[in-house]
Amino acid sequence: MNAAFVRYLGLRTMRAALTVWAVISLVFLMIHLVPGDPVDVILGDQASPEDRADLRRTLRLDQPLLSQYGHFLSDVADGSLGNSFRQRQASVASLLREAMPHTAWLALSSLAFALALAIPLGAVAALKRGRLGDRVATTAAMLGIAIPNIWLGPLLVLGFGVQLQLLPMPGSDSTTGAALILPTITVGTALMAILARQTRGALIEVLSEPYIQAARARGLSPATVLFRHALRNALMPVITVAAAQLGALLSGAVITEKIFERPGLGTLFLEAFFDRDIPVVQGCVLVIALIYVTVNLLVDLFYVWIDPRVRLA
Amino acid sequence: MNRSRPALRLGPLIVGAFAMTALVGPALSPYAPEAIALEHAFELPSADHPLGTSDNGTDILSVLLHGARLAAVIALLSVGLSLAVGTTLGTIAGYFGGRTDHVVSAFADLVQAFPGILLAIGIMALTANPGITHVVVALSATGWVLFARIARAQTLTLRQMEFVLAARALGAGQLRILARHIAPNLWGPLVVQATSGLGMAILAESTLSFLGLGPGARASWGALLDQGSAVLLRFPHVALIAGSAISLTVLGFNLAGDWMRDLADARSVEANASN
Image 1 (cartoon, helix red, strand yellow):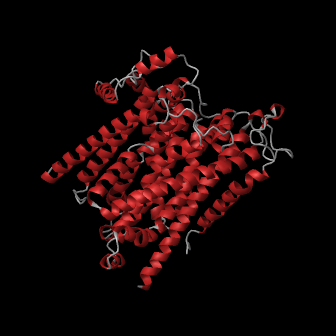
Image 2 (cartoon, rainbow over the protein chains, first blue to last red):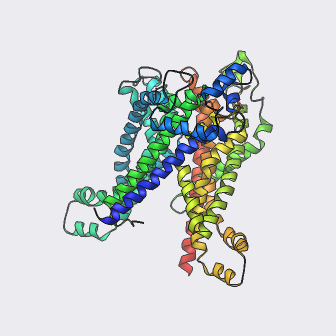
Image 3 (cartoon, chains in turn brown, purple):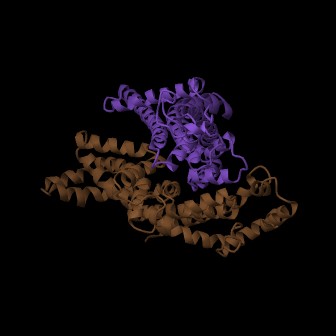
């Protein structure tokens, strides 16, 4: 580690911390930025004045803005994120802790699924450039990107759950591994398609470089050239793109949880939405944004660490 | 021109068909999209109902035709708003540079810290009766960033070009340079992005409606897909038709975007070759 890297690390971390602070403040302001009285939005216009006053106190809307902000920050700082007001006893953080593992498993298995398919698919396309294998892979990638997950999910249920009766249907026990298969394909397909395109492009570029020709000229087997020499360099941008797609992965997980009636962050988010449980909505947005900022930070650092040619600015 | 990828030509065709549907479809619709006939619920396609019926006996064809209008209106408004805001901010950031650029870029980074559709859900959650305006604002809240990035990058290149330096040397004011010399040269990549953006906005509207967070109206493709998914096992035709309409349209806009990108590339290649 040299001085330039340490300096970059410091600056980049500081920028991420600033973004986190801005995100927290925006999430706090969410409730105030919306036109109209949040109390009306939550209770409707039929509520009694007592209920309204009570809610106003719970939400601390009767206090000056700055003191509300202070309370919100301390709720974030002590890790509780305040209390849900549909389930008064539960802190937002405890609800999030319960939901997170389900979504994390779905996101990770989708990422694994996407990488496991995209790299061979992209490699075949690059090696058979312009020929049948390439056309098939490229068309598959295009369809994979175009098919929305709100449509792929029901299609998979129809095909594998109903017609073939191979895999569990939505709403059945979601803790089994088999129950994870269809949701994983639903979330992972678009990412797989994007990564296959990326692998193809990166590999085509790397394969034309002199060091690959040199390796071939030395009589190394095509497999050695591909795996030991070409893929290693080609996969760098693929991993970066995979990490950058994390947001799409999380959005996909939210939608897919609804289709397959699975518990998780998305289900919590949507339920909180329909209950107008604003602290929980704020908590969900906050957690998603934090995951996003953290991953982007790690990817940036990883990229600089692995490839010193990246300009440290 | 598009020698290698003739399939891309499907794009403009699908987009054209969608535009026609959105334009004249509602006028040709055989029923009102919310007309209820409980005794005809979930019928398969027939002479009376060419695409069958959904729950409450609503005519699926009519829902599709009216839904196309809704999707088109939301897509045009949200992409229009994103384009206007993004281009303005991006051009200003790229042209003035320095602190202005830092502020705009930091703001864009911040907005990108939220996955778009989730931010849209968050915004819809805080609205009592979500309507078209709310969906448009929710989608534009993140949609402008891509346009801003493109406009900024373009402007950074353009402001170094000789014709801009010449205009400045002739004493043209900043505003005049921005409006008369920079802006007209930005359009190419922005139009390409806007085309794909329309497809993404149509998908986003469908997704919001599918999740039950749409703009109230029942005549939405996403809402139809949601109803169809609920009865997938017994009446798969509802979801099949709605899902196909959404997928085909999104695919069409994607292909059209790629088609235009290839077209623009071919032109720049030819321009470079003739230099």
